Amino acid sequence: MELYIHLPFCKSKCRYCDFASWPGLEGQMPAYVDAVLAEAAARAEELGAVPIRTVYIGGGTPSLLPPELLRRLLGGLKERLWLSQVCEFTSEANPGTLTPAWLDAAMEGGVTRLSMGMQAAQSALLKTLGRIHSFEDVEQSVALARSRGLENISLDLMFGLPGQTPAMWRDSLEAALSLRPKHLSCYGLIPEDGTPLKAALDAGEESLPPEEEEREMYDLAVRRLAAGGFRQYEISNFALEGCECLHNIGYWLQVPYLGLGAAAASMLVDGECPLRYHRETNPGTLDEYAEMVRRREWHRRDVDSVPPRDARFETMMLGLRMTEGVQEARFEQLHGMTLEDCYGQKLRETAARGLTEYASGRWYLTRAGMDVQNAVLVELMD
Ligand code: SF4
Image (cartoon, protein in one colour):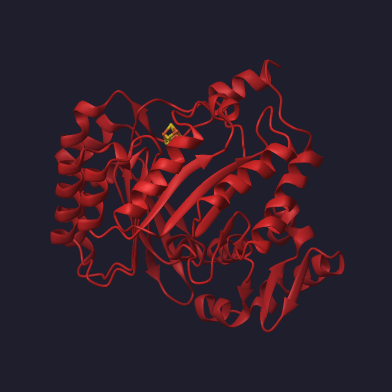
């Protein structure tokens, strides 16, 4: 099983962000850590001794948590959950918030990997995004992490931003590479409803680059990162050999996960072969979450059952994100049905149009298929 812990505190709200994260709630951090630990204890009781394989602390900005609270959180999790077999332990961190004391507490608590939001090298673009840091802050944070012995660093970058040109994107890629990360995530901006950035775009105050430029930026990333020794293992993710994010691969392979904290989701298995599972999502605000934990009213979680047919589709939807695609043998092992019987004809139709390919017992998206991934999935779903 995988473990995700959500820490929803941020210094300020980025203009594109619709995650469950809030600025100005530092005073609630101690109570929140206690609530997460109480939830962990309740889950341990409910699920029994399930070994955890990967841990991911996300947010929010986990690096805003004071070191002593981080120690309490990580130490408390170790006492409550089975973490002795963890093989990857990631924490997100934001440049400009990282301190030596925080890093020491994180590493003492087991953190082995850092994921940092760099997003762009240009101050103007960082301002457009509402980020609180500069590229120099990223440089300093990476150097600081290295100086404490934390080498396994991933950087997030964003393309398709208002005001961004392919040349600027190339500079951001080069700047990121100059910091020698082991992993890079390159996400195209998706303007989410309810965010200030989406409102400005809708009002015509800002505009996105043309679609062909956005595609050019993505192609540039694929080519440049390949030349730099990074293997693309998922639509948006690139890693040096052996540095892929095991936690995210687990999501794409439908490995069960436990989510702790406000708005965190869990995926819990109800039956194997055919695979049946359900998702449970915690209340999305701090107050509702705290109330649920205090009263032990676990029924307040939103429950979504995934029947076998939907589980099969999710295997395709998630598996086709990865460059390795979906293995026939694994599909059959999970679902007790062959991939050929479920999707064979549709996959051959998309292969005839150059969108999917079959080799060595697996189906995967071609480069052209990645560009229209959603359309391919809609075809498979019909
Ligand atoms: S730092 Fe991350 S979680 Fe916080 S507001 Fe910005 S994008 Fe959202």
